[in-house]
Length: 294
View 1: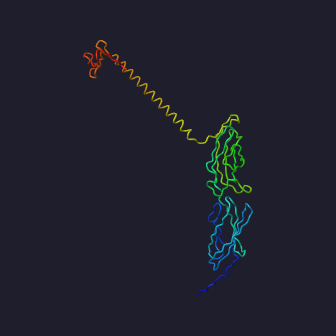
View 2: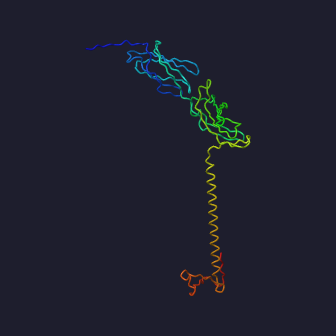
View 3: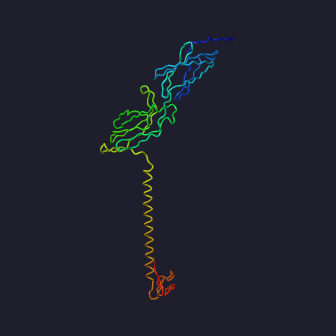
């Protein structure tokens, strides 16, 4: 024996399992389940989005008969903070969650260029890779002094460079550049960080040394110089050996030249050490033309 019981749907229950599926810079995909399984009619949901930074509210209406509902919240701001609630349109119990959108990326190619009494920070425009960034928003720069263990806000700029002065010798600094924070510093971009740790010590503060960025020329130039010096020494050694060989041959030839015979006399290798035999004589020179040894 069995009996079939059909439960009366309770429209006062909240949506179930509300969670975020994916969050980007300007949107968020959320998902939830209906208050009860297998709805037999369209259900109207109210999705309320509260901007915790700007203190504004927006309400979206979503109609679905599915047991699982997926919805994309658009027109959000990078680095924003939001409180999302979902409930049936009859103002039943609600489900809620918090969402933090992805902040703007950090500026690329942050570099330091040294001047006489200051340094310049340079970076690429963030608008080159972030369509949601407007140059009028600008950038803000912070500096951390590791010796004093303090962080200082240096200012903001709408340019792609910033001048930093009055650095102290013997201090190590870290500079960060990011998209300017909005609404009380709550909506910021990711920071790009550069360490500046090669300041000298024991010198006058007016002659501040700069941190040297990694430079290939600093490695290549000494190597090329050593190669040139090595080649020069090699040429000198070869030249000296050539001169010695030339002088030795000249002295050897002069020592075997006979002015009486008008010719040079050389001993063959077979006659070396045999003083009794007569040495073969080279007579290929004319008697009336003196031999010239170069």
